Image (tube, rainbow, N blue to C red; front, side, top):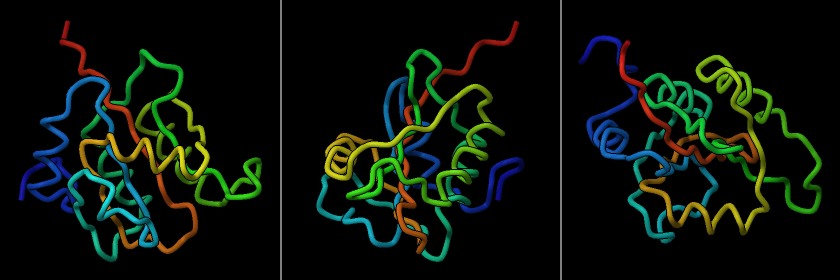
Length: 144
């Protein structure tokens, strides 16, 4: 165990987060997501909600402030304007850790395609539909 690091961030996930550079992306996905054959390494957080994983990851990883959008969910198939309840929870967590950052949505297959280029895919036990989010890593500014 380490101080000030959420316990659900195991050594493999911490390594991936630390190894990521500015602009690299990581996906946090639900239990239904077809993660295994997209290409990136899959890290599993069985039984953990996607919202808990997002909260833990944003405790240690900044979002990219040099782009218009640094957090992307998956839009509802056939109704892209519909807002799933989990979207509001994602936005709340993002705002708590990264004030001023937004949350946008990508069409299902565009989300899959973007996930293919992620550093890793964190598959959670999330059962709420559309519990998927991609995060673009930002920078840590030097102390003054």
